[in-house]
Image 1 (cartoon, rainbow, N blue to C red):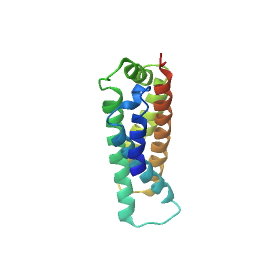
Image 2 (spheres, rainbow, N blue to C red):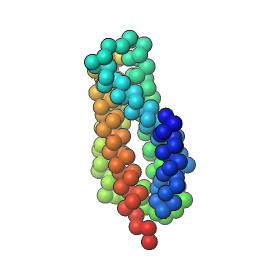
Image 3 (cartoon, rainbow, N blue to C red):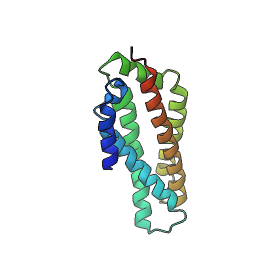
Image 4 (spheres, rainbow, N blue to C red):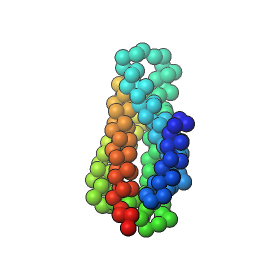
Length: 158
């Protein structure tokens, strides 16, 4: 968790890449680390038996972590007012530009909506459901990180 928070501060030192200068980035990376960790443990839960309390905890961590991450992504990182034109342009590339299909389809659809629906609508703490939701969440996190890095570098420095 500390490495995730520290990475947010490292990105904050990249002064030429305005999209990465968000004050919410350390918190965002912390939430992503929690979602990724719970997802990985849920996937391992298929082969490593665990008690029902652990399964329930992983289920809840993935569900609430995805809800928090979706809020941070949409409101805190992309739709908020940006301090510079370059940051706003990079966010537009993700929301409505060349990266929008990947963002809305993979990050939001597969990486957030699908796992949240699986976790919220299927009763109980079936480890297979949590595992599938975790796989979807990890795919969404991977694509978001790729888009976040590439969009931040797409805007020319001069």
